[in-house]
Length: 509
Image (cartoon, rainbow, N blue to C red; front, side, top):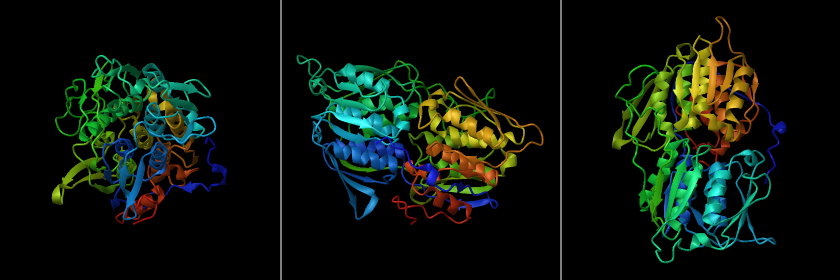
């Protein structure tokens, strides 16, 4: 389960440079984050669920396999892998066990699988051993495991404490019983430190309605990527689950450069303090409703395509942009203008909106000082634009992203290494990155960049390649983690023809 791909057998991917200003429409598949949550909710729903817009990628296929191992069933509708009919698992979920009395689930490198599924194993009829890729064994898991153990689940680390591989099971069944038999309406209670990943908090919220009396979860410490928690709560409420949440912070003034007054237009500033520390969410008991659920396009994966317009010049359009939305990627509407782009949310027929981004080329890029703590997954794309802006005398500072050291790879270390590899000047800070302006006359130069098996670092390399001809990437296939056949989408955009999108099995439509 923990073997790595044989990268040495792969030919480097030549990152294509821009041939001129872009004029492209790009249709992206569904959101990975929304797909993961929708699959979990469908797997435990009270009735069958029809899902549309499902992302089919390595991460989501691993989630489908994991939920199937717990007794859920998923069928493609009319042979379309993006449309699924989901039949829920019995509760307690039934686990097919081996000679050691435990089931097996491979999480790959998917944070959603390694965090969202173990709580379901804690209310199953037998324990499950979770393991994954070698890099997955380095990702933090301890806060979630501690919370499950505190609730009464069986948690046994089989390697390094607080990391994969780990065995999680029902123990003596504490999570299947009321916490107080005399008052069965009282919720179970637990605290979790979500400073390393908001997925720890989301994982507990998702299992909460399945516990007798529900679950009260208190977040201790700063919560990274709070919009993902908002997404989880919204998903539960949409399926009929009552969630009492802490008071939402007042919406900040619109985006503005540091030290300047904010503007009243545009989406909320991602640099606003929305940590959520010390807040409690109470999830009431009840199985989620079945029915129909549609999944929005992935706005985080939209980032590289939108950013390409700023580097190459021209215009890139993404139809189907949801507004409002809980996705962190909506922050592109605020970030890209600060980096030198022009952004328009254009209304279309039948209420379908298209996000239009225009740029004047790399020489018009600007540096940025931004707190990305709420939208950390966007950092590699912002860093690529900042590195290219540094050629034109503009420094950048990216803050609030110390937690990226525990993602698919240590993203801060990777970005510093790869920016340095192409001739940039970058260094880590306690909570982020500094990218210095290059001396006058200095330019970035092509190099063979590493992906570290991280799809977002691969997107960084593709953007560097737009502005630095001759750039190569050691492993573009890792993008299949969240965006199947990224090279074809990228080539379609650069061909100055509308991209045809994908059928999400990896075949162009």
